[in-house]
Image (cartoon, rainbow, N blue to C red; front, side, top):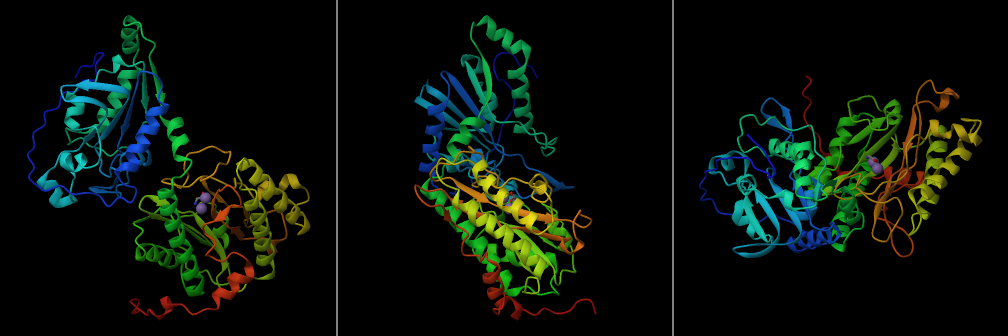
Length: 477
Ligand code: GLY
Ligand code: MN
Ligand code: MN
């Protein structure tokens, strides 16, 4: 294959599909995505073109893939859920025989046989219903030869290196994406542009996407609120159901069962369910301990509802009552979080929230004799306190707060075994994490349904749970 100034790859495409088209179940709707494309276009530099590629399919093992998940930027701008597509956005109107256009969506072709195995594809017809100026097949992306040398600036996604092996797929867009970047980054390409006397730039789409995605529209807030409500409800049900004979895995299962019961398709990230020593591992996802009685259990999970993910953590005593030491640490994190949430107001920064939470934790740890000096506090509180949530659990966005951002506030204290303090504190790990909507006035805690104070938690844990009525046969003989 040969590349010169023009993006050119030869693929022979032939496929006739007679299957009917369908629409996705998209709560945001095609108007939302169109509006976001226009907002993106408004921020594009003069005479520029932007390329977005769908997320790759990831191999799990042998011929099995991980569940497909669209790239959040791509989903935000298109609502498109299938792989093997490209979105091209032009700053300025382009013209062809059919008139003006300023965007093209390239989609995967229909394939009756593959659809029997893997499910429906929308194809050209489905895409045409979704409000794009131009819709073409992925093979057209190759053959259509968009002349990128006509543009002064090419905006790109960051390329990934974790792509499914598609050796047997001659329409593989991921090889093409790699080739594409190779071309526009190559010296010969810029030399040729030099002949054209243009200043050429290849820049990331990240800054523009971050500026758009950081503040949520009302439709997005609605979906996030639902994801957070489902996640909080799961925390409540687990608080009622948990007992010392349960395992970490079983508790994870109860959360995730409730997510699905309320229509959430996925978890927004790998669920963290760790008791005792495991509660001190910040991103513990093994969740395979079977001896959890009389310990604190840290549960950091989030339902993903229609693409938007919650991020909620509760830490509770498995036996329903905090020990003296567990309660001291828990109440300290709780107080720190209470004060930190108050700082989540327009104009403040993540750093303002963090400083408030650290100050309270440092003072408390000194009072308890766990540290001698505030400078040691980070040993037991080693992470930041806030991030944006949205289509990603760690959504892009500014560290300065504006109205309609949704962020977490999540202080924690983790005291692993052999820490330099009285062993009575060892293996206590506490994180409390809530999802906060920034408003013109007070912050709104969207995950407030799930109790947070030690008293409220102990009270709720006394309630009966319908889950404990489910008795399954013993299969161990
Ligand atoms: N669940 C990951 C985090 O809290 O950031
Ligand atoms: Mn978080
Ligand atoms: Mn979390």
